[in-house]
Length: 336
Image (cartoon, rainbow, N blue to C red; front, side, top):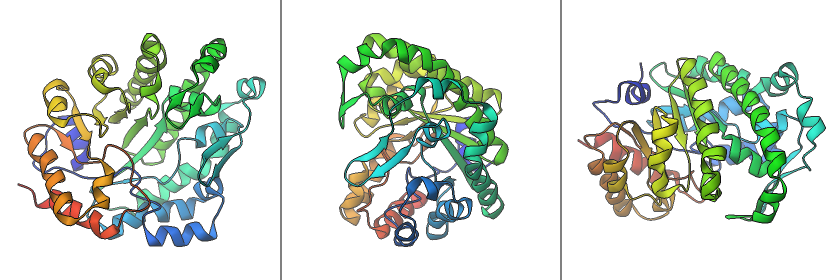
């Protein structure tokens, strides 16, 4: 059992393990070199040799405790027949949702479309140090629906009118998306992933009266499925604020990633009963060595006597200097 699994399963560790969301990617010059020759992001995710190589790049540079497979939560909508494009300064753009096409997907078709991801996991597991964890991931049911149906008005604002208009459609597809997410999870575990993280990136946009239906229940179904496959699972319901507590009570994941708007002191006192992960604002890594060490040490002190995996409260930013990442990792590794 590696240090990440130990924290998640046994809720104890003699050290604080560390990995970073989006650690494989755009802040690394070696990644940018590959990306320059591979402008189509979806095709890059489906190139098992390159996605495995990108996954391993930060592991060669840094003393991280886990690799996270280079992929994207939107590979599931892609696998279900939607076109997905990543446009500069706009982010992901999906083709119009087609209910008939969506409902006629089969497990074989879906698995075949995403097979290169599972091949990448197999290749990575063979090359990765056995003491290091290999994390796979999915987007939550709600977060995928936000993208698939285009439910955002702007970056962090939900289109309430559209949400009401599409409510019957959402209810119809909730169960089906969940089914294909469980297939994607199982395929990743079978390929060699030993931890699963569920990203509910837009949980904070859900109206209060819909939280149970759109967030708690779908996430619980996924968490129960992962646990039944004897694999530890981490949830990241970003933006829930103090509702993290009710999420934890209902969903009961092995680990809970907090975002950078959560007070870590509040989290330690109010989110007992699970392994906590993350919290630090990635923008700290755009500052200097002194500030990075100060902020990291603050989290390390607060969670010293609790099961805790050091991570961020959101993904790595493209402007981050890799030397600052080294400073952070060294600080965590040397803390006693």
